Length: 345
Image (cartoon, rainbow, N blue to C red; front, side, top):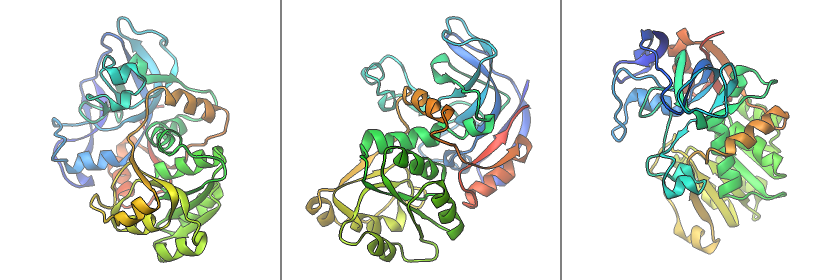
């Protein structure tokens, strides 16, 4: 048996609980990870509320981000050994289709995240394919490494693979206080770009600037469109990183330079947006979708974290038993960076 955070019915944060459930075992080619820390993501909230297009068997254990110790190996698992500290890669794919074999596994028709279709990382033990664990560097804490995978994989693909950000370009990061936002600020700066961080409070803007953003916009206390116009004028922004969508999207579109790239990975503020196509074709703006990244990207990201060139941002660490409080904090958007659960010592 093992301890896990789970929900038995859909609803608000109050449906979350911690209970004893049957522990998984390592199957062929799998690693059994003793989870030390697991980070929350918005998908955990959506799954708890219930998604019409994604049915889960109840009870359900969520969580795609984790750091832990390899406790056991299944038959045929290679490249790791028991006792290794590892970071878990959240993406699961078939491993045999054209996309997977071309290094584009996040485009696999069977692609999904750990904690979606099956049980996830908010538990003492997690069985995953051996290909989904990456050796952890010695310096960063378990909590910092658990805050890494989904946010930094997503931001890396958005900026590096999709937008192909270049030195000197101007990058607008919407929702700069979220996990993807803080990752995007750091990755954009790593590639020599200038960053405007837009967030919902003055405190989040200040923290984003401390993280490296060159300018900031508090769209909770000022008009986003007017502030962008004041900052960039007729020049416009070259790249937009957006995981919110919603009512701000038309203002973001108007702020784009000729040849700009808008990359979206989510719709936490609303999935129906208004697009003035005249801006799109006249300024030759590309609107690009993005979901996580190929598995191989996590090796590079973990290396950069180990060298101190990227620094995961943890807002708070809570024990697994405070899973309700963790959901409430994330749902209220009262965090900067990630909420991380301490699962075991």
